[in-house]
Amino acid sequence: MTQSIGIARAHTNIALIKYWGKRDKELFLPMNSSLSLTLDAFYTDTKVVFDTELTADSFSLNQKEQSEKEIEKISRFLNLFREYIGEKRFARVESLNFVPTAAGLASSASAFAALALATASALQLDLSMEQLSTFARRGSGSSTRSLFGGFVEWEMGTCSEDSLARPIDPADWDLAMLVLAVDTSQKKVASREGMDHTVATSPFYQAWVDTAKADLAAIKKAIAERDFDKVGQIAEHNGMKMHATTLSANPPFTYWNAGSLLAQEAVRQVRQDLGVSAYMTMDAGPNVKVLCRASDVDKLVGALSQHFPADKIITSLPGKGASQLTEADWQASLERFGAGGQL
Ligand code: 2P0
Image (cartoon, rainbow, N blue to C red; front, side, top):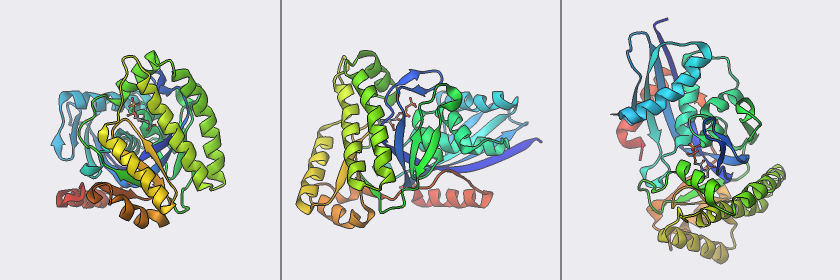
């Protein structure tokens, strides 16, 4: 076959129990298991074409050809699949990120999950989603979890083959997430470097690993019982603990800025004023994400808008797992992107 095509969509995810630190940097094996919520509002569509006519891999993102450095990352990822089945052809990769630029969530999670599924589909690999997640993991740790929808656990595993994602719960019980987009510019400390530095230098790091295990067990129980407040409280505490490890790294650093603190304060104020449950989490950047009930979104957004710019509050419902797309779907994505659907 001269040409093999695969197209896929994957949504991004926000961790409620964070992945923060690798025990094997080459294989992307994490120090602790993590758990996330897949989001409906943010996703990546990717088309992969393996072709005997190609003389090198190429990669366009949002219809812009990417640098050698970016192509190299994609090639290394494609090599995992090529080596797995003895594939020799080069590939053309095209990706469209449907992530509101205002959200500051240009996520590697949806990107590598979509690329993994599109590649497996082009090469007609007979892999389960769990197995495919071990490939996605090698592109970016958080993408392991983006193969599935709802609440997803990434089990740390014992080796490359069993460090994989599993769906925990469809999250179809009145849940939503708000993104308070504090600052959407490029992050100063990439998460990869940030977590490595923290593992190497924070005296609090072992406490993070030890308590993350207990947090995971507790949140899984709370999810099974649909205990929203328990889920939110565990997530908020876990996220703050992750950020405490960066403050205690040497030299110290933080992903927060002054706007992050104001956004956090707004959430505390609003939940006190309204008496509505809403819980915060933050990742390797200054934006604040708020887990809340879908039925409380209007009330919360209305109240938060008194303290935070309304156009910087983005609402998402829980999202689905990664799926294959048809050529017609892809054409529709191109049109939507062209019409400003990326905003
Ligand atoms: C998470 N983050 O669990 C954590 C919380 C950020 C903070 O996964 O080196 O881009 O590619 O595996 O996946 C961001 O780290 O890092 C991340 P690599 P990744 O979502």
